[in-house]
Amino acid sequence: MEGMSRLLVCPPDYFSIDYEINPWMRMSNRVDPDRARAQWHELMNVLGSQAGAVLERLAPVPGLPDMVFTANAGVVVGRRAVPSRFRHPERRREEPYFEAWFQSHGYEVTRLEEGLYFEGAGDLLGVPESPQPLWFGGYRQRSEMRAYTRLGDLFECEIIPVELVDGRFYHLDTCFCPLSGGDLLYYPPAFDRYARVVIEDRVCEARRLVVAEMEALRFACNAVCIGRHVALPAGCPQTVQLLQEHGYETHAVALDEFMKAGGSAKCLTLALD
Ligand code: ARG
Picture 1 (cartoon, rainbow, N blue to C red):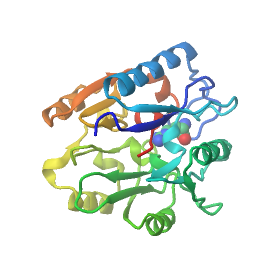
Picture 2 (cartoon, rainbow, N blue to C red):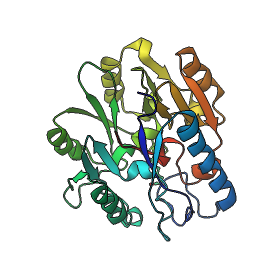
Picture 3 (cartoon, helix red, strand yellow):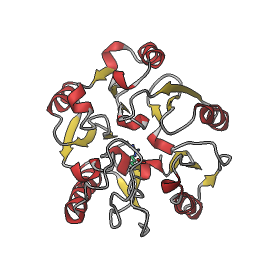
Picture 4 (cartoon, rainbow, N blue to C red):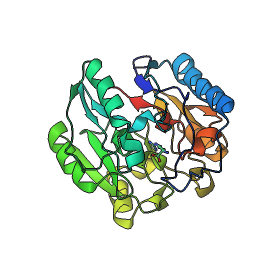
């Protein structure tokens, strides 16, 4: 399947820290635009040239500094797209642009009711190669649990809601990364007790790759897996070793400019298939 992955991305032309909506963001911590651009291009080089993904570019919009984080555009399953309904008004302004992209690219767009918070593939992630299609939906910090009842009906699949209890890990993709081989890279303390038990029940021990706290705090789990390739933020050597032991080819990319907004590799992409 390598070379067949399509990812939606958005260049960081207007990326900056203009507000604070998660514990990582500090308006005093200014983005270096040249560094951000170079880091983003390096990630695109890894994903496109090295891992063989097809990159679809969305035009950035002035005044929408978090639009680079296309994981939050919505979720795509087959030809159907469900655009996000952001919790914070600062990001709600991105919704029409993401929705217009899905519309103009031939997706069947289903909109959730207003006021039902759901932040797309940042919070809803599928585990591939399980006997049944199995999805996990993070809630409490950004998306709401009741969104998953609605989405499970829509996609006719089982979505297991998992509660996120640590504000630093406010989207599921900051602490949970399903990998192509059926493995799961994750950071258990970000979840409540019940969610940890459910994850352990659904993913066998040999396939659970537990990330160390120090590297979880560098967003080691915010990785992009394409076939056997995994792109992850630099500064996570234990996670790199863990992934390599499980047969993955790792690509560490410096993405610290995006950490200033509370995002890293995975947040900068949206899987389109
Ligand atoms: N500043 C953005 C926010 O707080 C970062 C989003 C990161 N996206 C993600 N999928 N984790 O919404």
